[in-house]
Image (cartoon, rainbow, N blue to C red; front, side):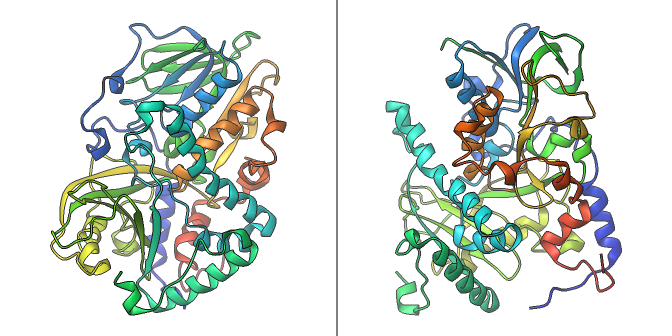
Length: 460
């Protein structure tokens, strides 16, 4: 199936958007369903910003939380300061679609083509391991983790395009060939009748505190300074967990790790719509793009439905390179409002009850960046490893829930000098920020991930 071609000027404008400095999060984001009611921790911060720390973590999402927790599990004496520009967990983590979801049968095919079988298997196993890891974390919370924090459901992907269905069957066959242990867990269905029937350590959370600049010092005790909107913190380690905004403090990543605004909705459903939220989630796969759907396990059966990216075509796109989650995405909403009636037999009459946007971070080759930050990336002189360093865990490509938690665990091991302990399960080489990898990334190359050949004249 050939890709449509478009005017080159459209893609030049999109590429320029991706290569911009993402800045810092806007002050008045749309209100996410998950942030109501507002919890006391949302605006937690010290009366006075700490003057020093062993580690400064920039960002309070899953990646920042996991890295901090696993650092304390490695060394409970560490003093950690976590900076958040807005309220706690107000970025992509607090604005997601409610899934801990990989779609390995769909993604493995492309991973294998681009990175080879060995890397594709390692990345896929890493993603699949997140559900067990997060179920385990919820269980460790005791009573607090028994309130539906994590639940196992059956995943269903509906393909609404004939050519897409043919390709889906090829992808499923390829996946099961290389993962024989998954046979029986993944099936395809084409029968219409069947289709009618998922403390010693210190952590200081500092919200409303914008990280403005990282500077290298000559101190051997605290080789870095993080300049914030509330003052300066001296530290041994700086960990960049700012995802879509990472290129603001690491400008060498402009056009290589860039933002994409996503649209989410909560939609009420008619009485006839099945209430199966405790056991199932869905993906709706169209000729262009896909949508992700979970359902409340409560009696209301509300759908948590997100996606709609590029359904209006690149000419109407306002989401690539966008960091404004104070505004909604008109082209995505137009599509999402119609999805229940198009994807489900009993979906007609569904109504949008809440809508919000969130900013995701995407990379030039679709894989995260989890590594030590070298001088070619920061523009700053590296300090000796024994003294400290800069680190990054970002670029989740909309799949943060199956990357962030264990990536944080792996990064904590790297920071504390226990890297050898994670090499058997962590895709170290694939997620590394090597100069070779960065040199291959560009804004135009990123656009090819979505559009293939950009125009009929595009030969690059």
